[in-house]
View 1 (tube, helix red, strand yellow):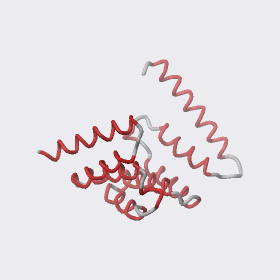
View 2 (tube, helix red, strand yellow):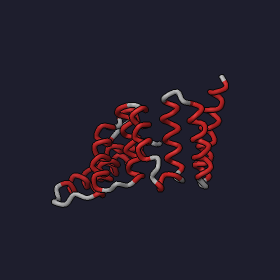
View 3 (cartoon, helix red, strand yellow):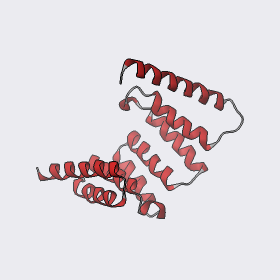
Amino acid sequence: MSRTAAVGTERLIAHGMEQLERARAGEEFSAFHLEAGIAACHSAAATYEVTDWPKILLLYDLFLERNDSPVIALNRAVALAKVHGPAAGLSALEQIKNKPALRKYYLFYSVLAEFQLESNQAEEAGRNLEKALALTSMPAEQDFLARRLRAVRRHGDH
């Protein structure tokens, strides 16, 4: 990214943060505030490594109190794993795995595979990447998952 584009992006992020602060001053607190707060945490991080995962986890906890969505629970599991490790993420996924909305949701299996890889469960991860790959029809996602699956299989051969 050019320096000019980076400065433009920084200005947009700063403007978004200002708008979020203004919205916080209101009396009403909605799901949009939570979504904006999560997005703000991601945007404010200079790098992925310095993302404020504890704050994101707190926001997802609040979000789940308002909306018991399986997809929100899946996103919360990611934040939980970032804060407490892949075993915590696997435990959270175990609690939601039978939700009908997740049975055919490729991201559930993709996230599960990542936690399994981080827990040295490559064989299980490979099976879940295969499931994820079979459940998506988006070419970019298929390409990503196929590359990930090939990498897991190569690693398993050694």
